[in-house]
Amino acid sequence: MESRLDPALKIAEFLLKIKAVRLSPSKPFTWASGWKSPIYCDNRKTLGHPVVRTYIRQQFVEAINDSFGKPDMIAGVATGGIAHGALVAQEMGLPFIYVRSAAKEHGMKNAVEGDLTQGRNVVVVEDLVSTGKSSLQAVASLREAGCEVKGMVSIFTYRLQVATDAFAEAKVRLHALTDYHVLLREALASEYITEKDLLTLQQWREDPAHWPLSAAESTISAEGNGPGELRTASRSTSAAKKQGPAAAKP
Image (cartoon, rainbow, N blue to C red; front, side):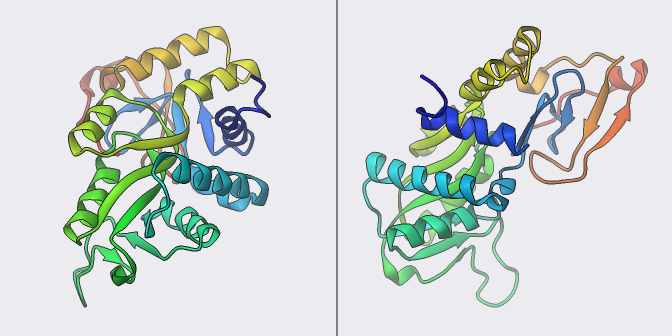
């Protein structure tokens, strides 16, 4: 199906076009976890493009109604899910709350901000699901606050096995508007990547924590799988050998 007719492909097309997603198999990025990755995703960029954010909002609303039914409230995950969650809540005429990455150390020491008296069941809005750790931490905070989590929607997910297992264990249903497989399909069709690149990108997803990195390659370092200054850092053979995989952090 053509991308203009398939919402998942259309969103993948948008993400590539506005450079919210960057693919760099030959010069991988470094996530905060220490993982080397040929993909860098910053979905906050979608907010700067009215056509893109409107389409995402519309698809979120449709996904929520179809997959979970209308909830009492919409909850956004800080920080990337807050703006999109507020837009969805406005479109659906629902109250909005958001979940902090950590509870405040002062005042009421809230992990969840907003008026929780407006309802009990919520659908959570995320911009990105990688390992699932931070997303499910938000779910845990909502449950601790007395909310029933009907499910979660996200703009994009890598469909990593570690995330799939974590969501299953937490008994949380995830509906992503687009994913890694669809993105690669669109990137290949638009000649953003080659068949050789596609193989490398597929290999990464199979085992991202141990994905090999040639010592001769340069790497691009970032603060994490989110916004941050990118810089090129050449690594010597000895330095590359010393560096091993680190524990995953979303």
